[in-house]
Length: 143
Image (cartoon, rainbow, N blue to C red; front, side, top):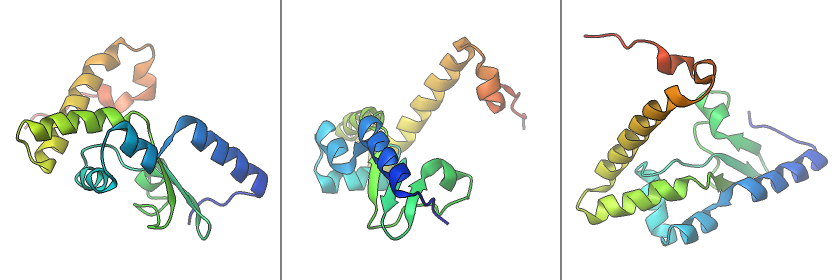
């Protein structure tokens, strides 16, 4: 079940989306990609996918709620979709990786590996990170 909002909350949510997130078209323009190229890169996981979506028939969708299995894994095909502006950096790195000879899947893996390495290196330097990301500080089982 997708989130339903009354009209005032819907208008507030739309303003929030337009302020902090990018539409597909804005993401394509910022990354200098055609719609087809952006779709291809998103389908291969070269950048994070949709973070929020809305459609008149089903209401609101969120990636976090989908991750926790409280919503469908993907938004409806006819939904208005928003992306994190940070996705443009993933796309730009992917473009460079593709130009270097990697295929889409290899570029996506390289992006994820780079993110994990950067994230885990910086996390211990963030105040109270153990509270926000406790699983990142647990020892990993060996073997």
